[in-house]
Length: 222
Picture 1 (cartoon, rainbow, N blue to C red):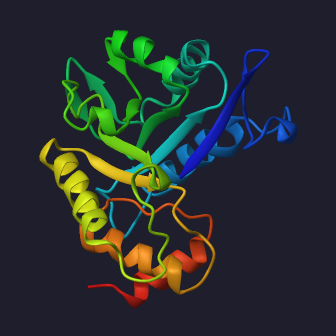
Picture 2: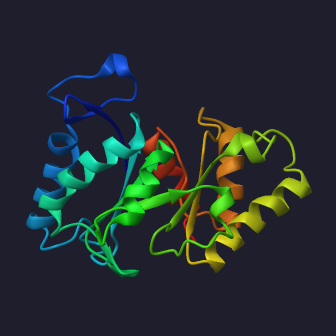
């Protein structure tokens, strides 16, 4: 689950673009309060069928990272009972794991916190970096930065090897990996890319077509 947030007059508003901002659409009202209610109703978990599986809430900072993250940290604290946390490198998993993405200015205030209720979304340069998985549990990248293939014709061998190498490097470091901007129009090209992501062991598939992805995963459930 992903939320794009903007710091506007001290409030965290949710919208993909600035022209969609609405004072009533806050991170708390659209995401944090409903998730807290769901976790209470389900006895401490998000998914009844997988009670130990946390939901990843990716929070994309659309405004300057440092002030936006400081406001976000304050907003997250009242929900500490449902949020995974990290203290001195030790992670305690709870029903929801918040991961901060977007503007990179959030990194310094995140690293400075003694107790964190959020984690940092890394980039390819963090694959072999010194930050532990307790700080950077996720590596994200734009598909088009690394791969020319868009699902039509054979996947070039060098690009397949690169995809599998990046995935393996993330997993060796105890991190998950995802790519955004993969082809998302329904059809064979999108499914071909999804097949390769599954085969490589990518942890997340990005899409706006949740029903289409659900149908694909059910059809290819092994």
